[in-house]
Image (cartoon, rainbow, N blue to C red):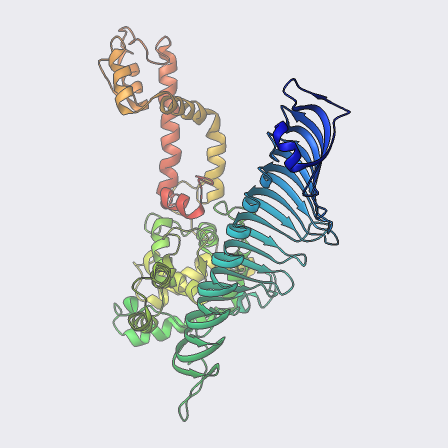
Length: 607
């Protein structure tokens, strides 16, 4: 401190622990009491508080830590008279950088970033001593702002967007005590906009006798207003039924479309959560049969009405067997499904239907898995009246400038192909399962007269043996392909056996891909090699060039295995083996659409 300022600002000076410089300014340790009542005790340099020290303010606030040129800058600790404590970085007297703030008489602790005395950046605030309740995420202006996770002490958790300390934007909330989940749009701490509400009630396991009757969680997807279902939305019931239409304050209100468990439909008005019925009208399925939407198939029959009755009769006769088969394959593991993949229901999925088709020996050139997937898309599509109902509602209710609203309507119209036509996790309800079997029968046994007979043969020849061996009249017929290769398990075994031979081919291709800096670089490298003249550098090109030298001419320089023509023949054999296995899998339909399956599964998986 300058000597001329001492009489003005300093009340007393104790520099017995330090020394004064030639200029009269304090150096080393010293204690100063200012006229304001503040007291500093610590290090001095050139008359400035500089180094480590302790500054006590008149109101009782105490700071201990670093000082730079008379400013509180560096790292230190603030003690407030009420017991609050800050430990961390400071800049010109304000909390700035990384720091920890705690409060007397409270278990609340904040650890994270600070900017100019305010929480800003990344930080975590804990609300209890065992740290089971906390918020972790973005801060701005001393408030939760951006992306963050709120973990409540009772186990509930919210992950998503925040604005000014409120849930706002997109987020997911899980209520552990009530086993519910909501994910979608939020505003003012409540669901507002488009979202999905899921109730994780007890669902019958696949081994239960009534599994095909209670097989998923209740799920609502649609509009919310202040936390309640309001506007257009779809409620999927645990039994497989669904309601699609208008809602108000969590109740069905207005025009709606109801699909019963067997696929039958009812359309009309709802009031206070109940259907408005005309005199003599009932709110129930039209029949006990499974409703099928196969008009395109029966129109090809000589007597369409008789064909429809015949198909329904066959399904009625084998109803219990088909339900047992459905339940059995709902729990069937598949090579196309991750073992720990989360599932919102225990319905049959496409991957399990693939396993059924393989086990039943129904995968042929005519009914490859690629073709079967197209049939599944047809079986899962919404009934034509529902499509018309939805399109009319969209014209009346859609918001042109709302991307989320547009995405909602597109999602509904494409729900039967969600994730792509080859999505291994696409759900298949029992009515759609029955329709898929009818469509497979129409293709597999198209040489037989009549849809009724085709379905009867398919069930008796291929499916009953999978329900119970005692019900099988004969073993399922072999496909016209290699006898030992008719299931995905067999294909996997073949790949495992061929792995030692396939690995060198893979490693060669990987090395080529990794070592080239692009097509142009590859061509330049190839052109620079003696004897190559910019030749094809692919595996086939390498093989062609190597095998071209088998007549005795010298091998081209730079070509792998060129010093051993016996190896070139071995490489050709290895590639032939790889092509044979992959070709066989494609022939069997075990590779329906590799890229589509990879995209739908979220990764390469078994492909």
